[in-house]
Length: 198
Length: 216
Image (cartoon, rainbow over all chains, first blue to last red; front, side, top):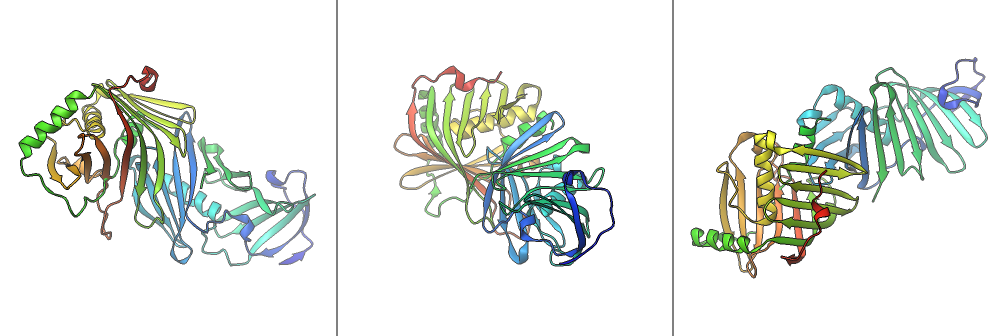
């Protein structure tokens, strides 16, 4: 990672109160994602405006770094079944009401950011670094846009992230050792809440 | 999300393949009569259940469990305790799904498809097939310990969600021991995903607290 003196700029909301300490290039670290080594089950609640829907999200590593994500109702019905590869989203099945390009792209983006299925994860990305106490912040310019990561160095884990964009933007919050995850799309009125179960 | 979406979202499950040892029932009329006679003696059913959802490519099944309740003629409830507390209740024409402190109630009386699906679900969970419409093909099989009723939708729309349902009835008391729902096979795959419900600790005709069927 190359650190150099950086020109001043706007501090992202996520890094409020933090000091800008440098800029340069970096590769995205494993700490910036939720690791999926084996099949994991989350309780996922989707709140969209006044509506709410919950079920089980099963996340399973696939071949060549891909990710299988299956969302079912508690009662056993599959809501969606996606395979996220480095280059595409493969829709194995999806309920008709959710099978819209805009909806699918939201899930794809969110899961890519959350679980780190990126084609460019090994590439060097431009970044600005921030710091306060035990927390480090990184504003990274990726191929899909700017992403901010807030890392707690004491715990060695990601505590929050955010992505820019009016419609595409989302705020990620993590708690309980990254077992509790909240993804908020403020402009859309959409919230996904994931709680790790097994 | 629309109520119809939520209702339909919970109606369909997946079914699995039947055992290789099963053979067609010799006397279908006699079997139907026996099944109906057994169902007519049952006013209530309570049991434990385990739900396992099997999907190609997943290393382990997605497991849930809880309590099943049925009261003649039109009350049925699945109360899940693991991995999350949730409930699906059918009471009359209404169907309620509750989870995480939130409830959704759908009235099936205004929608023919929903009404039909409600009858199918009730028939599947109780083994009482008299209300099954002609939109379903039924085949009957047996092995040493069980009868198996295979229910296949004829309607193309229904077929998109369910390939077929298998009901396994214990020959000892004609009670349902297992139900399996199979999803249609997707292109490139050899078998459909399926969900099985295994029932145990069954109690018949014991009183059931009405709160188990509350929808409002």
